[in-house]
Image 1 (cartoon, rainbow over the protein chains, first blue to last red):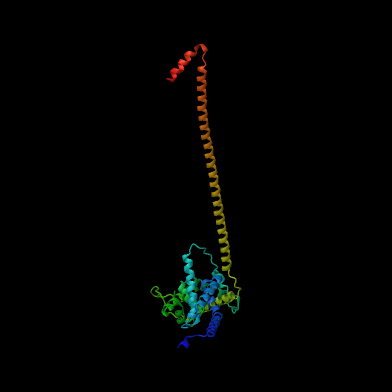
Image 2 (cartoon, rainbow over the protein chains, first blue to last red; image 1 turned 90 degrees about the vertical axis):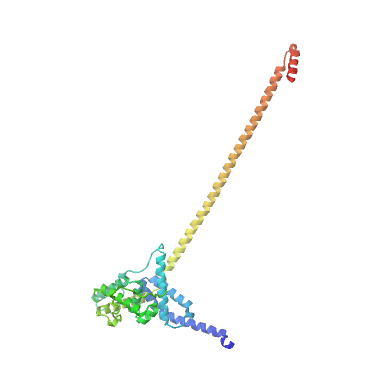
Length: 191
Length: 151
């Protein structure tokens, strides 16, 4: 029994190296997605970058306790959502602090369009629609916005969103329906 | 930290409406597709930018402002302390000078009083001596006067 519990220092070093390599590959594969979600949530490049760094720092500290019950992406997204919530809560509490934000306005956010739109008119219409969706997203509650972005930008399944946010699937569906209703209204009231 | 409250919206919310993008109406589907593509294009561009965040610059500036403010406060406190010290020294010197003047004045008065007393005594003895200078013919009477005084 004693022989089983005694670990060779070389074995520990190898295990540490393996864990570091695993974490490094997780960072490389999931960092862009976490950054994208935070950028879409905040519309603030600097804030998204800072929160992404904090997310991976926190993940690194707790990497040993990650048991792989959910996917690494779900786990990281959960950390990112909590960091974002903490950030906005701290902003609300520290109301006396400078309320400077680098968030871009909706027009600027709508300027980014995929290049496959052929004509100028099509690009203009697409830009207008993207702007309308941004307007609707801005009017959503924090939960609705998170669920909406996870579903229609990150393309997560309802069950994954439920695991990530800690909500039931029914609640996720309810939030999505309300968010979609808002987008429909913004697009012209077609239901 | 995870949201654990059930969503409770107003009655009649389309909770059972389809949320799968393929099941949505074409306009909504197109708009959501464009929105996704737009966010991804923006994110890809932002992600490839050099990572010198403004946060660092702002933090550095805040630190510099903090240090400047602390330096100003320290300088203020030091100069205030020095001024206070100088003021107290000046006050003490003034009080000491006043006390010296007062002491000198009192000494002068005492001296003057002593001098005045001495003068009076001198004058009295002079008067006495003068009054004693009687003509020789009146000497016996003067002696009788002295004897009378001594008795």
